[in-house]
Length: 106
Image 1 (cartoon, rainbow, N blue to C red):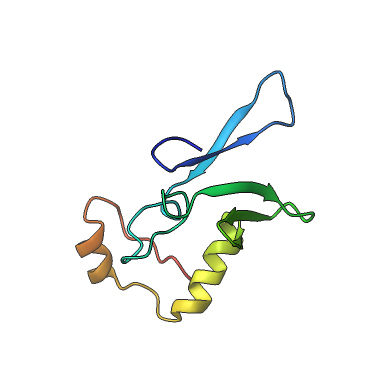
Image 2: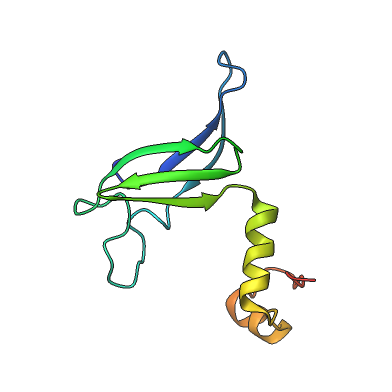
């Protein structure tokens, strides 16, 4: 974990050439609505591990362990199921005016 509270994820299948695959920042001290979040002075991260299925990331901080999906398609499906109403072209234009509209959920 970096000093900015970002966890870098690496593909180490080939230890001679590790490759970065992503990072987790918003969970680690970002805008948490007033909560301390993970990776802060009040709630430091003590451990990270992928579960046996390799699609879940376990993050241990303080006295809790939280599980997060690491498969982008699974996360997208979960978000679409949660929101139920996809973003409209007008909302998209307001929030991402420089990005062409793509319906994010089927």
